[in-house]
Length: 80
Image (cartoon, rainbow, N blue to C red):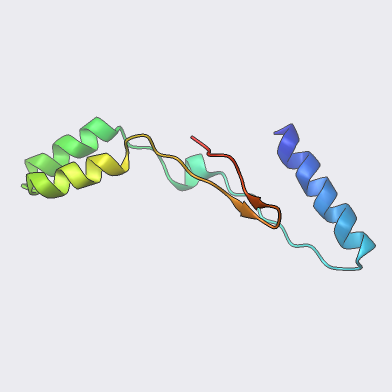
């Protein structure tokens, strides 16, 4: 996206100013981690006999997933 391009340009500019090398890598996480329909996954786990306690724990991992990034400026806002 545009935000990522602008961020990368700022990093490159700062690295040039400091005479540092910059390495970058682009990963398409949608392709790296193909998505699986969660309900199908949970049904399959139930079918193979996983305990209900463990199944509940796993399903809760996928409820209201939030994340934050730590930067030099501190923590970002929550990312859904």
